Length: 56
Image (tube, rainbow, N blue to C red; front, side, top):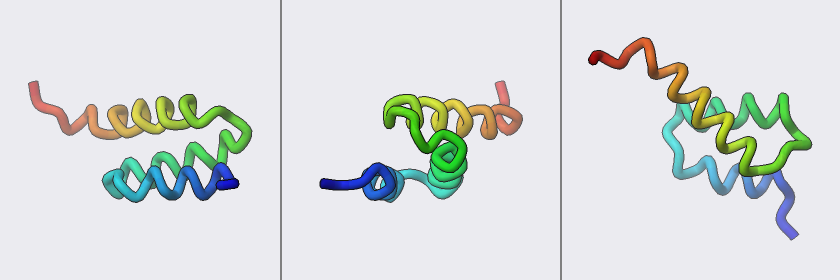
């Protein structure tokens, strides 16, 4: 059976480096949380990091 860490690593391979880093940072803080929560938090963190660079 795959561990949560292995699943997370497999998932983050397809992500951009900044999003991959965000997922890893969130994973350290939220080790016991559900994968879907972890992904949601990482995506929100990624877009919060990108927000200042977005021109409307």
